[in-house]
Length: 237
Image (cartoon, rainbow, N blue to C red; front, side, top):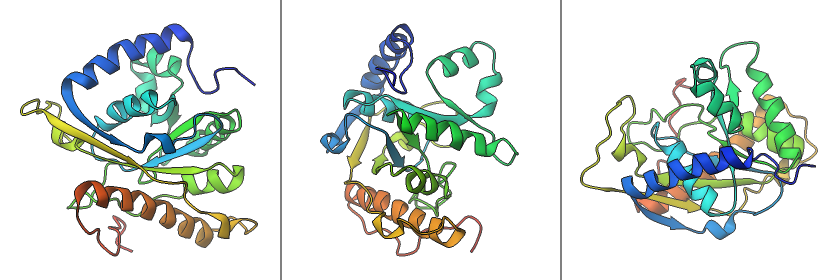
């Protein structure tokens, strides 16, 4: 097993940290809590909500400061952009080709990384939330499948504030006034009741709902609000 599971080479890691950390400190104030709940070793799935194109970068800073290098599942299109594709590959990102026959490959790569002790940053919603009030939506089942197949703990992490810096769909950040990026970490999601059950659709959907509920609990704490009893379903189910 690699002594640096799921991590890029030291030069590339240093390059990313030198860019991301000062930029993150400059752009937002920090309200980070319970980072000690993140296991420092071993494979983990970090399941989180998605609000903005900026949150993967800001959340990566939080995770790095708490001892984990996040492996990010990134759109396959980024791996075709000149120069950028070199960086995303070197930084150990995993390409995701949604809606194609290659979509399952990202889960296969993720499983290998988890078994080697890596930390996968997973957005179960699959995209930025479409909930009008920005609560987590109904999730897709990939994270639950990985967790149940590998026995990997799922750590729910919620964040708030990246959307104020860079609203979804916009390219120009709103730098002033300086925004606050809040993060809360919850205890591992208890998926024990699904152990030994066939990984059919109903089981995966229920396990996914448990994961999304755990993320939502953390987000409700940040926002100081009561979350909707039923999560938004973009499919209208």
